[in-house]
Length: 114
Length: 114
Image (cartoon, rainbow over all chains, first blue to last red; front, side):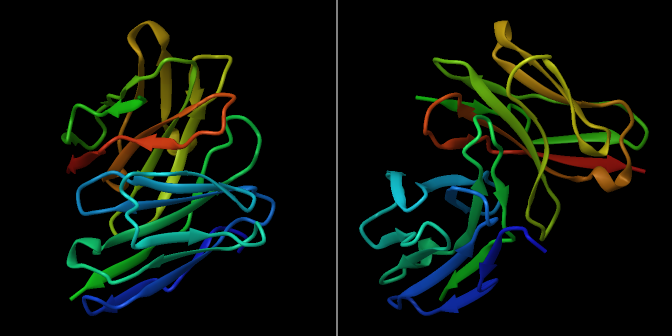
């Protein structure tokens, strides 16, 4: 399977702990996106990368959130000092450089903060 | 700023009936447009996209959508729904020819009556 993969699929953590999620995009895709989705809502944009460069960050991404894509391949999203409000599905997507290239989504990582 | 509006939170149709899901966008330039479907517990699957050219685009699973620039709309249609079409549907918009994020609507949940 050459789709977008995310690890872990589920994460339960206690408030105040740090968590890190990984996303492996489709291999030939240069763009990588992170979104957050809560119950009953559409995906909310967090950040995206063009190769290793982080091009935009949403206001939703507080100082506790950091994303990296060091070699332009996989990406990590870290949340420090988690809060209960961080509980959500974190979605990763990738797309090609071709104009209008649609993002293809991974299965997501469901985070539960107790 | 770009925005996407899906006016209907829930829609219920009978199996075999036709379907139209509405999507309106606000954007200062020519957009590219997508529809995604998300079944319970599943990831987001691309149904179709509009980039340029013919304003009526065909997608998977018998869906189609029509781009109407004058109405800033990109409504999704299907002539005859099946019970398996019950899911959440998301419209998304991106800006053509720029490095830019893709914004999603809040979604429309489709219910199918037997």
